[in-house]
Image (cartoon, rainbow, N blue to C red):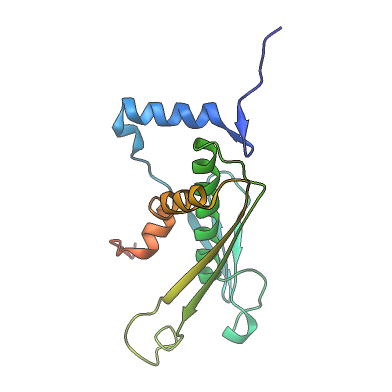
Length: 173
């Protein structure tokens, strides 16, 4: 009989994470990845994003912004993407550090001035600020949790993308 059990902590496959780390250490070029999404406009302010083979992710605007409020809007999805990225970072890094997580929550809020979006002013159309409050339930010490927090804060791909200017090339085909 073959043992097919996998070492897991926080429901993370430790062997898979270790294999990925080993692969990138052996071949740093393996760390360079490309991700993609395709968005289809449906009607009004409704659209949907297709990512890999998953069900489409709907998007719409609230009624106050002229939409039908049938789905989260793009800025809400950006906050959700940051929260999800942070959750992955905490789960992965806690697992590597041997920290068991009983619960993890990330509450996000962003401040946005609609004047530029509405064409009423020039300037920055994006969030003026984003705050993410992370709550962790664990037996780990405060020092261990602060080290985990520092590690995740310094390595979140979505967090870095939001916090630092990234070249954006919008091309009309």
